[in-house]
Length: 413
Length: 135
Image (cartoon, rainbow over all chains, first blue to last red; front, top):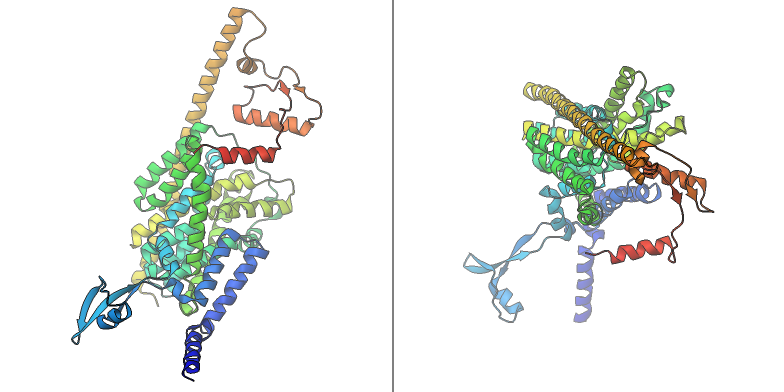
């Protein structure tokens, strides 16, 4: 009979620690959100490389919150410990409480907790930038340096959203971190948030990466609303070829100038340019390949899953987070509009030589935003190829958002 | 409600942010334009020098045939390349465009296009190259 009681107690114990009992409705809502993200990643193929690991991290943490648990220390009475370990003493620190000796036994944290340190300490974003740099051809930007202006105009969303966040009652540091979502650059958003408002890292990272994945849905309506059919049909002149020397000098010059001007942006821009120099120099193809493939993939897995794992139900489903999600969307929209409107201005000034659709690519999100410009342009004029023209503002946007990040950090930190 | 101090800060951030981002990127625009022009003029000069040297050499020898790439710079596109049978026109155009893009306009001439005898498929060769690349 005693055996059956013990069996029953064991089963009850297992049930009580299972997710069915410990999870609440918020966890279930987040599991549903994760499923929606799975759908978007797998069926719709919206940035699946990002969205799929994010969604899985979200799923895991809401099923088993312990996977993100920080390491702890438990107090175990020394006598109890010795009885359980055949009287073998341990080397743990001993604390005496009410004349009873306790071992301070450290308990390891969850798997994602350790992987998350790369996000928390700001290590992953510069490493991602290294890979992005190694994958990016700055040729279109070098051949048409005016693209830099579009990369600057599309940062408007960051600063307008900053004001919006202040109006909603966020502190200036939090507002800066929220605004940077408008840079449409996940690594930059994480980097700034870890410096300014680490408490908001989860919602901001999830918002930034989700919106980056949703660029093909968010941008086209804004681009169409702000341009005329005639403007969207403009065919741009072919870009001049760029010499190898120019491509090699570019990362060195940008690193020197940006690091001198804005030291806070140096880790991001520096790593971006290091990756690019490795690519363009042509003498370190092995490490360039590693940076753009293996390293990038490994960091993407760690970053995606752990960013997703910050989205636990109770933390995520509150008014503050919903506010951040909406402000992030606003930042994205304003940034896109800023880029398109500035491109319209450049179109007018250049006598109709610039297609305003490339302005929206100024919000980083490489290369998705440039692909959106190409796609929207081609729906109006199937013979129009805007991709390479849009890559200029697109990569300028990466530099622009890193500069904007440096400005925010230097003013607000 | 946000304090007046925070609203003031908002304006400062908006203005400083836009001014600094635009200033930095405009500065970069000029730098890139400047060194682009510099590099282009340097390349043009070196090309001109090479062309002059080739012309002098040609005059000295007084022979119609000069070494291939330099002669091409002087007298581009002599005749249509000899094309092996079975290679479509699009492939010739693509090869010619690649040569043109890689080496610069008018410096090289495609004289012949022929298939390299290959026992292994392209995929097989790529796989072999990938797995035998030295570390």
